[in-house]
Image 1 (cartoon, rainbow, N blue to C red):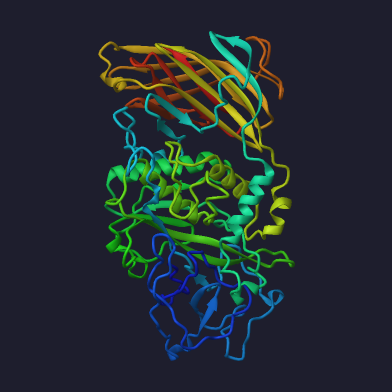
Image 2 (spheres, rainbow, N blue to C red; image 1 turned 90 degrees about the horizontal axis):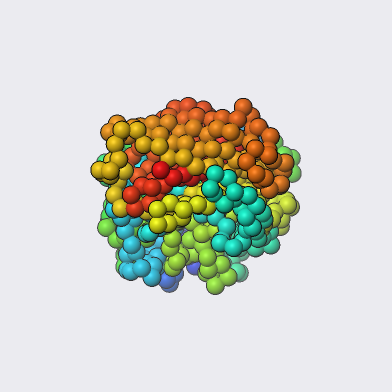
Length: 582
């Protein structure tokens, strides 16, 4: 339940309606309601209202209480643009607000929602869902790996990168490169513009008070808003003493979210933990704390039902420089609370993701209308190792790639602009041991996403007694440039035993015209200088770049006895998957 506070002032209890999220008014305070009730209780597991405890703010300090979209909120000392009611200095018009440096915030600062995620997240795999990672020798991820592509154990297969591979049979084979069947073409496999607009409009409306509440007449929020984090992406930090396994899960969720976000707006992850007892996070930070619910902020603890997770955003107003809309309301910081004793495996990944996505601005939508999203009250009943559903991923891309802060519902379609549900794909496949390796990239709405997958090994690479000295895997790279040009070349990975480091070389790189299918090897034009090289470090059954050219490399070994390898390369000018055989 919300716990709004003004910057540098103590928190006060609040009231939320119908399990909906509430946000403060932008311009005018509502009439003061002396003696109005406020609560310190949260809603029941299924949204049933709990009894209210009356409380009354003291007149001491002239702190007035007023009703803001279902909130009782403390008003700060009079400021040039937001003045306390009843003082004779009513709120000034937006045009009267002085312009401030974009780096500064108004003193108004609220934490207007605490979004509980209940235990409805359990999947069909069992009450708590399957364990994450299993025994596939996927090493624990740390803060330094947050920029890498996701590594996902799908049971019998390992997957690297985004979940965007075209289904078998959707693409025609256009060439054969080094034993790999190369496919290319377009597939309608995304979320179309109408559905994205409808979802974001429903998301914007989730911040409204119930129908009939007079506060919905506020001009800034009368139709809802599409919220987002501030202009710069946040830095995620975990609390001091967080076990390595929980850090790993948080990093994996950040990797999954980053795979859906534009390249210029990626979450960061600080290697410096935050002290367990800490003030609210600084602007630009998200703090993730794992603790029993009894250790959460007192005003957020349910008296009856156990909750798995909680998101506590902090909002601020910032100037825009636009006379028509001189300020914007945005999330500038936040805290996530997760009770690790109540959840594990895929379910816990879903809890962490659900709460982090709340802090990126998404609210709850109707599960009947939008069943395939994490962002329904109680969380999704369908969990996946890829963490996010396609609708979650595309909504993040739309909001952070196209929309401005505080977008009104009636402007979503205009700001979204041309949006297609059709992807351009290039991908390759070839055999590896008893299985098949796939790799490639998909481009849709300006975001290129590479991927690779193959059969899971039976043990870690370092435990394979049949391998020693220098071991080589050779194959192909296939990718797409931001201009929709297909790029192909040779991929060669060399790993030394027992130090488990080596090199990854891409040579003979060539490209074809925008949207054109790759032709036979050698039929394209040299891409850049035709080669890229990286030093790599092996961890378990994975490897990442440790030096070399620009770009991020994330890879894995495939096949029962490590017969294959594959991974993704992400650069500003190229997104590619690659694969090879030993």
